[in-house]
Image (cartoon, rainbow, N blue to C red; front, side):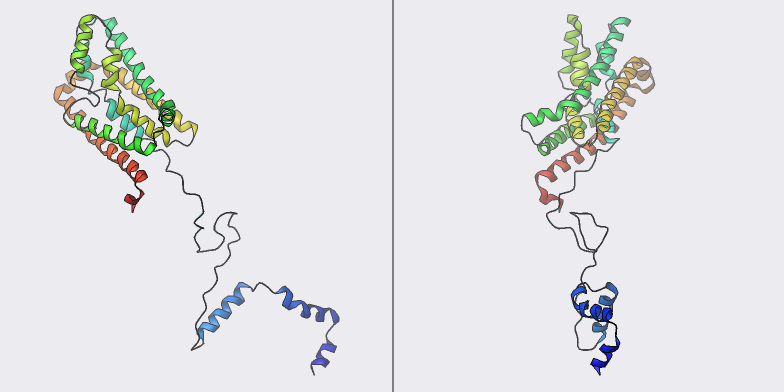
Length: 290
């Protein structure tokens, strides 16, 4: 009977039938799922685990199956990108031009109008220069000395926290106890106080430099680095504006208002300092992230 059926079929159909076992190496997905569901529905039989379906859109080197994670040898994710506004907020809190107004008024009390204008210009340009240089070459400097960024983040975060504690006590972030005396001595000697101690360390100092280096490492494109340099321009303009209007601001806010603003900036800076330190500690001790 079988020979009779074969005789009735054309020769090309016989050839196709004979080649079926060789070509059918991949089982269609519908038939595979149907067979698995049928075998699972039979009592007394254990359903086999369905193989992961192949994802045809998966690129090379990535996961090639649906629901299966990428292999452990895959490259790690890069660090998160730079937050756009956080560097500016940190700089405004650290530099705090309004909080430096009492120092400026004290140092320039006996200056002429031209001397006061020159001091304002030099202080604004100096603040911009410190911020721009720190953003552009600060990271290369610490790499030259072989300092890891995680260690620098922990140390810089501690500096920011100390500065924040000073601001919570209504003191300038970068100020020291001898800065006022040093400035007074320079004024008596006829020297310029625009750079030291007004710009460094009252306005900008180690905390400012550390902040710019930490955020410069998070940049991924040239325009992000340009934004950091642009923030230096913003800080320079804010210093120029605050010192130019120092008399009016002091009359409107008074010493109490300036102290309140300084304390508010200190709270903001303390939160940023804890965040910077936590990032560095997680990089040094990955077990803390669990």
